[in-house]
Length: 255
Image (cartoon, rainbow, N blue to C red):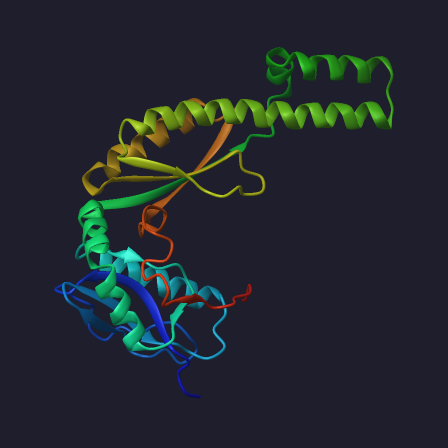
């Protein structure tokens, strides 16, 4: 089947190398190439028909972004950005050249790390001591056992677990802010009390990770921390680096 537009992976400087022999997303992935306009280039491939967010393609997209970032700053696109044709991409690169170059300068030598925090469902005796609400609900359930009392106790415990995890999360974010250059809150994630991304200098990555590991060890009874990265700097660029040219391809979860 013929290509249905141009799949855009990211924006780089025109001199940025692209790993040779790389292919893009899709069941029959096309070769990756660059489209240059002035001092910028878009890293693209032919857009495959019927693209969906399958794990294979999500990983292919992210792996290419990480490979590009190893050789210099990149403004990564989110998965599924498709432009109608090459001329549309070049036109928008030229129109936004100054802003894109400034963004590339800002991201030079930097990486993104994402931190999620979840409550720890343990330590009820400690929670009873820490939370008057839980203590009252537990006492009420013991005085008058029953379904409603159990539900109220369960709700109080859930709020207490989330509350202490959120308090611990605020403390670790305060520590990490001293290491990071910027931070941005991400969308709510079910089961998490925190989803935040940090922009930091690449050389600060080990120090950043050490802070998270030390905090997790000291507060493991209150919060579970999940650190992911280094990542392409998705959270610190315009969500559509080539406005007016690209559309998000309708995607659905796939195997």
